[in-house]
Image (tube, rainbow, N blue to C red):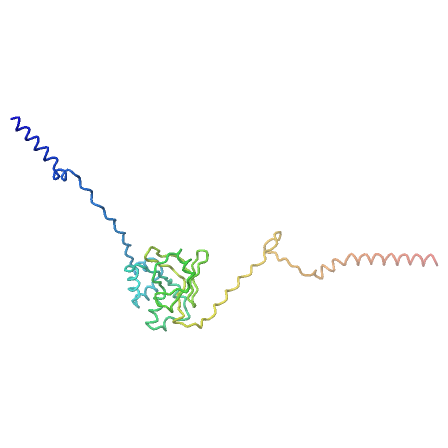
Length: 261
C-alpha cells in the first residue's frame, strides 16, 4: 500500500514537470491589434450642394448641360487630390452683357465650365502660397489659367477678362472646396486678349454745404453786396448834416447883411 502511494505521487510529479504540461499552463500572448483604417471622407453630392446652398442654379444648369458635373463629381469623390470649384451666382450671369455666352459652341461652354475649377483641394489659407505660383492651370487645361492674389486674407481671382474675389465659402472640407465668386470667370483662351478697358468708377456725390449753426432752417443766407435801400439808409445822416450846415450859413449871412445896413 505504501509503495502504491509513492508510485502515484512520483507519477504526478513527473507529469506536472513535463514540457507538455508547462506548454498548457503557459499563457499565450494576446493577439496584436491592427491599426484602425482611416475614415473615408463623406460623399459630397455636388448637384444637391449647389441646389440648396444658394443662388447657383444658372451655373449648375451649365454644368449639367455640358456633363461637366459628372467630371467634377468623379474628381471630388474618387481622387486623392480633391477639387476646388468657383461658383458664380445667378446675379453674376444675369449681369453679364458683354461678351455674351449665347454665341459659344458646346465645346466652348464645356471649357468655360471646366475653367471654374482646379484639380486639387485648396483651403482659403492655401491661396496665400498659391498666389506666389500664379498663373495656375485650371481643370480646362494648360492655356486656361487663373491668377490669384491674397490681400490680407481676401483672395482675388483674375482671368484677364474678369477680376473678382472669393466672397464666401460654400464648402471647404477636404477633398471638396466650393467658393462663391460674384462674376463669371471669362478665359482669354475663348474670348481673346483684346480686353476692353474697365469702366472708370462713378464720381462720388458732392455733399451739400450745411447751413450755419445759428441760422434757422429755411432761411436763405446771402452774401451779396448791400441793396440800394441799405445804401440810401446809410447816406441819410450825411444828407441831414449837410442840410443843417446850409441853413446855418444862410442865417449867419442874413444877420451880417442886416448889421451892415
